[in-house]
Image (tube, rainbow, N blue to C red):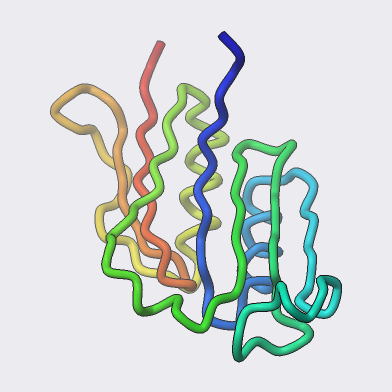
Length: 136
């Protein structure tokens, strides 16, 4: 069976470039951006500006994230939280601290009943994160 990849796709309301550059500073990796002006007019999202992002992909760092700008970004009814898990406590504490800058820590990293360190936050773009640091 071939490997299947699951990557979160986040929709922003006009600040996709800024958000994805922030995530690149947190997670590292290569960020590829395609603006609305770079795609045929019939493929552009209605109401978008030429500088809005049609598609962004961050990979090669700690995570893979994809995103775009959408006029309907706030209209989604599904609630999504992104969960990061791993055993590299130093790296994941750094990620937690970087993501929390300008955001809101909902639960500080602390020992959870299942034995891991666990924390939750909402970053400055309104994206909710859960971090689970387990000891191998």
